[in-house]
Length: 143
Picture 1 (cartoon, one colour):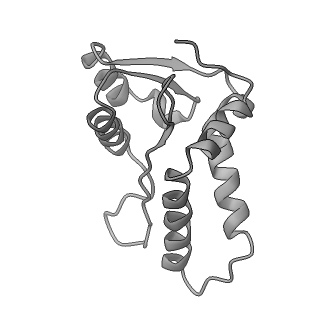
Picture 2 (cartoon, one colour):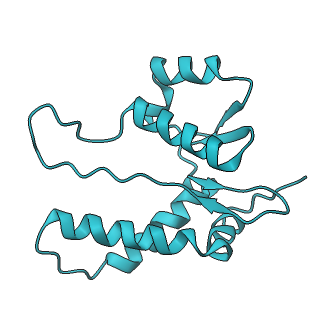
């Protein structure tokens, strides 16, 4: 999740899940994972959040919509148009991560996971790069 606020440094929040094939282990992010990420961002940012989301099916689930409605006092959500990755700054972040690990000769999945986490951690300390991902969309912030 890329976070922008005029006059403050840009932020990046993330959570990585590694699917190891264990019985009853979720294969990917669920609505609770997104909820927890939003709550963590709110606590660290210390204020309300305006969330701009793509149309991933999970973002449109009943449970996540109920959470958003129940927290409308601090959470406002706008949906991007369908098939509009050029408007999503997060796509720029993933592009940078993939470019960095594109030639990685990994011995196993955990090595890939560590490389992704390492790159995301590095990006957290580079607000100018996070700003560049927003600039790449052509969207602008207004105070």
